Length: 356
Image 1: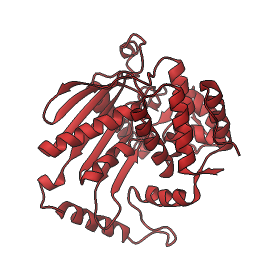
Image 2: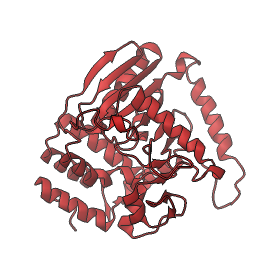
Image 3: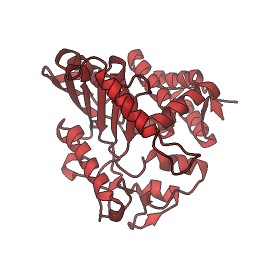
Image 4: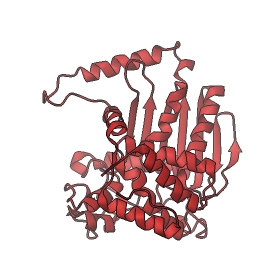
């Protein structure tokens, strides 16, 4: 069933209010989650609410945690999220990176003691409003990626997002997990009762599986590429790079390093993030960067297609099309997710607004 962005906003807001999140954090979080669903990244929007409640029960999320700047330099800062939900932490950090970029031409911020922050692309996109290039990477609360030649998960799905402003075209926005798929895709397949493609995930023995339930319970995703012959060592390397930027640089926990699991003495989540903003006009004449990027995007779009029914796209094109469609037609939610959200509402004591 499809729901308007407005009703989803109201439902998420009601849940977060019941959980004691401050009003300014709620606005940031609701905007991020609904924007994610509008752009078709269904694995990281409202579908994450049941998981966040579970993390709250386990003491990993403090919904009203203060965000603090630990170290502040002209172009670099370290932020402590206080074990809060990642959306307010991520928005705060990206805006701080943008502020520093305004002053110096480049701004970088790392965060620790945060939690899952939804889709990485939303933070990179924040830079576009200012005409800046945006970059965001994040560690994850748990392990999911199996190193090439391994059979045990050691790293998270560790996404990377990069956004660059154009003028004639929509912006270039790359938002990707460093696993073959994000782990949320397994939840979607399980809710819909569908098998997953072979090569996405492994079972507990390290063998490939197409059973979404088995894959979700095992939490063993292949690195981007699927296997060594198809380049999984590259996805594995990118995932490690993300942990270096997001976790090692900030002092956040790395799930696959045993000594890091108790780094906070079980006081809350300790996910790390990295944010960067670059002002291209510091290096180029005003508008030259955007014009050149438009030329590149136009050239890529003009690539002769292998299938005349499928034109060549660039990163961000599918999300732009989905955004326009869902603004008109609403956001589809699986029946199972609707049931899960009703249970969440009953548990936290707020009105369920998605009933037929």
